[in-house]
Image (cartoon, rainbow, N blue to C red; front, side, top):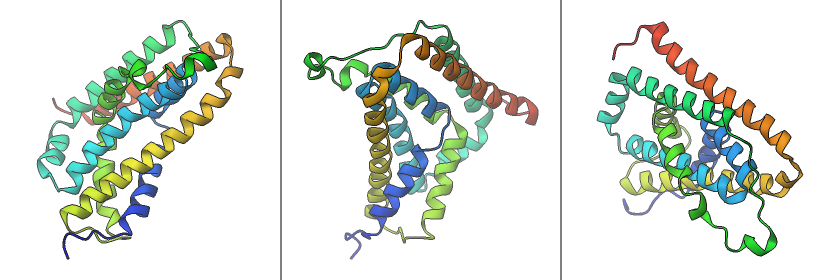
Length: 220
């Protein structure tokens, strides 16, 4: 009965997806800032990029694509430096950018959609796949999931990846909706402060990634 997936994979995958999305990391900081500045669809667009990155990594991990894991280990220094530089660039841009609150009235709400913020998707996708910690962490997650539920067939792997993606998207939809409800209470001065804090955090995350490579004497 190889074609009948294990039903326990669904709740386990959803929980894993939420746990992956919830911790505050560099991508999460950027996604939250986008939700505050641009509203529900801005947060969803940024969150989708992160989810798509996690889905790609999870898919490779699930099918045991050893070449991906090997490439991450072999070129970790390069990947980490690229990710670090990107984070520092995003952080500096966010810190220096003039704060803009995109307020959507009830009349315009129906015309605002995901495509208005589509450019945020590849940005957060790139930041996710260039984070060696996220890549290695998801590979470790797939190894640990077998402790709770058996994953044998390709159908099981695909179902698990879909459940993880669903859990992550559920987190971002809930968070973006929550932020969207209360963001109107934020003025430009407060947003400027939030942007600067987020920019500093992104730059610090990036600097830490690069510093770790230098500290360990990583070769390129």
